[in-house]
Amino acid sequence: MDAYEAIVTRRSTRRFREECPDREVIEKIVEAGRYAPSGGNNQTTRLMVITDKEILTKLADLAKEEFSKMEVQPDTYRSLKNAILASKKGPYIFHYQAPVLIVTANKKGYGNALADSACVLENMMIAANAFDLGSCWINQLHWLDESPAIRKVLEGCGLSDDETITGGLVLGYAEQGLPVREKLERHGNPVNWN
Image (cartoon, rainbow, N blue to C red; front, side, top):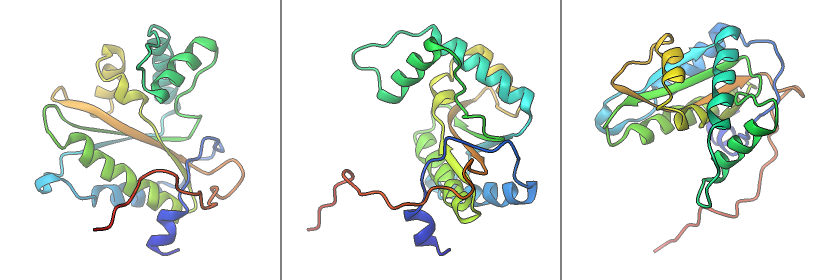
């Protein structure tokens, strides 16, 4: 698969098999993330690769608990609204039971923290597709960056006091085998040529 095909056929996967990909493949995907561009070539995005089931379960329980305390406001972002409502309805596992969660963090107060981390995450999602693995962008921990309980768990995974949680992704084998790769029509992201 060439780079263009890996980009245009990448889709989010939300149903995963329990089997964890080989560490060598995960390391290659992480390395693809580390080669992402960054403002001023700062390279300050931290990657926390979590495959420990106990940590994944703990984070899922804490996320459900934290989201269930929140109320939906008229201007609540759609994905955050969905997380809040799902956490109040019953079982809510933000990482879709994927065997791998990669959380990104960057320096607090750094103007390019989110942009740099987004480049890292995108590189890894494209690489995952090229390796026939499913992936999905995960924002929930970013929204819970100020939760002392979430931060404490992630500090055990490498998060520093001077860092903010910027995002994450889940990774693994898609439940149905290969990830869905059907090309989707584009209705947004307008382009102007001058």
